[in-house]
Image 1 (spheres, rainbow, N blue to C red):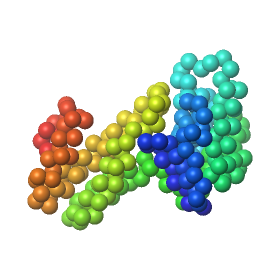
Image 2 (tube, one colour):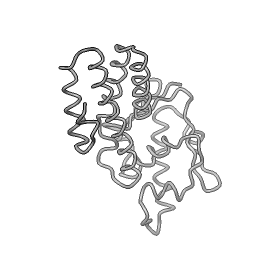
Image 3 (cartoon, rainbow, N blue to C red):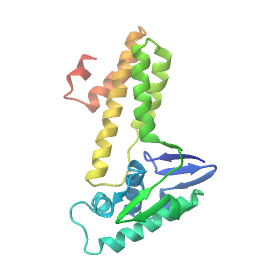
Length: 205
């Protein structure tokens, strides 16, 4: 089974023609729990760790039953995708574990991979390949991650995605300059300065 998960823009997932989006994950907590478990998939996540990602340090007195209710919504979401909910999201020894198909693609992880591919291609002088990979990375990293949600974990993930975007903009400038197309480097260079106004490398570019 091929599974595609989008955490930027509107949260969504698609598997073999079955599609579900954020409207199928009611409540603020369900989207965060899904995104967290996707990021930590194949690892047993202690319930306290998952609860902290959802509520921060101030856990409500009834957080355990509340978290079970949220996890139930995530299982329903997985069922809409054609995944066996009980086997895909298990609970054991005070931990939750999400096991996804081997052929799973997550957009934020794809952005990191495309940026790295662009870097390697630029280093190898393969400018067309570098440009295509950098543009794909920019398209993903330029979208908001889990819009409408907050909390320390979400902010940390947004900061990481922001760094991917910054690296991608730097690569785009360098690729255009290497190709002798300085005029095309102006746009991403301007975006880079706007996003990182105190970054020396941005002004140099």
